[in-house]
Amino acid sequence: MRDIVKLGITGGIGSGKSYVARLLTEHFGIPVYDSDREARRLMTTSPDIRRRLTALVGVEAYRADGQLDTAAVARYLFASSEHAQRVNAIVHPAVKEDFLCWASQARGLVAFESAILLEAGFRDVIDRLLVVHAPADLRLQRVVQRDGLDELHVRQRMAQQADDATRLEAADYLVHNDGRPLLPQLQTIIQLIQN
Image (cartoon, rainbow, N blue to C red):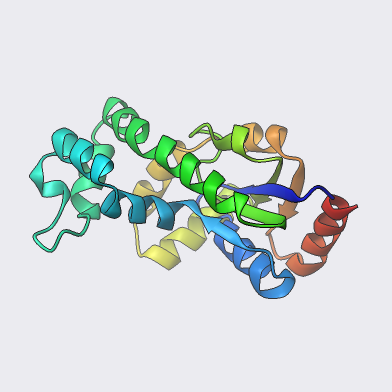
């Protein structure tokens, strides 16, 4: 195995990619970069991102305590695809740079978790892609139960992500999260990567 192998983890909303990422850390000791969490951190701590988001969204992008107002940014982001592209053009390059810096400090296998890995153009910063897959109806049911959202809202969010066929075609490895045991699947994948 090379000094550092960067494994991307993605899957549709409700596929269980965050759970798989947690299993990789807890059972196999693999450090995982959570792109959503790190994007929120960067949106709060980077003066450049703060300035550019405020110019785009307005002063409501940040609360009085200086923290990102995720609801205000989400309203802007989901208002149109053009708005989403503008926000992404600010945030995604910063996340890429931050991940590469983080990964450069590691040895062995590291992972990058992102729901929109393909859509955001992050494929070029990873070596291998693991797709967590579950049937759309099961994913819908999970998100409705987990987040308390109505089905229409969840379907709209699902429609904004890459479709299953696109993710499956891009995958180097596939984890089926439809009731099959996950740890044996992950063990096999890790062995393939490390050999």
